[in-house]
Image 1 (cartoon, helix red, strand yellow):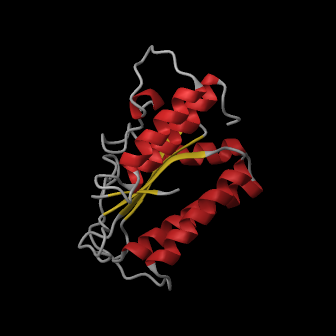
Image 2 (cartoon, rainbow, N blue to C red):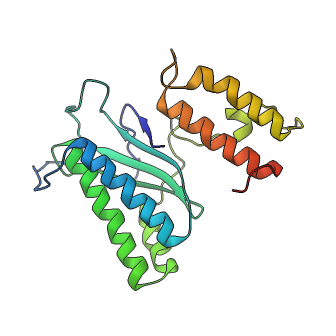
Length: 199
């Protein structure tokens, strides 16, 4: 599941574009999003390393697909690196998303013709400072409301997940894709840590 975050959270280390161009991409917002998700899945498969904590941050909201600021920042963790790929060169969100797709595809090309170490070195340029508070990854204990030292069983995780899903699912009042994605990730991490998941 891809989480989305509004409003746009831009990495502090990356300057914003002073002017934007139209771009030659022929894609829709949904098409560009599908391309980004597909290239990330392929990159994870090719590298043998999981993409975790994926958040696509933009000013797109329900009913507003053409925000004044079309920038997009893709945040995720890969091979222990907190990565952010931000693009605001183009005048539309879908063009900036499609550009991110091409950046990821370039990393896949590096994998095919180079090594994992080469790609890791390239990603150092995208390495983000700790993500802003709205995107900072919380521990599974925090997400699932378990104390830092409490004994937790797989049954505890499953029942807490079920209860919290009812509150955080995007179809529920006050729920969202981001909250549900965070809860799903927390469950996987919790089960992996306490031995109930196959990770």
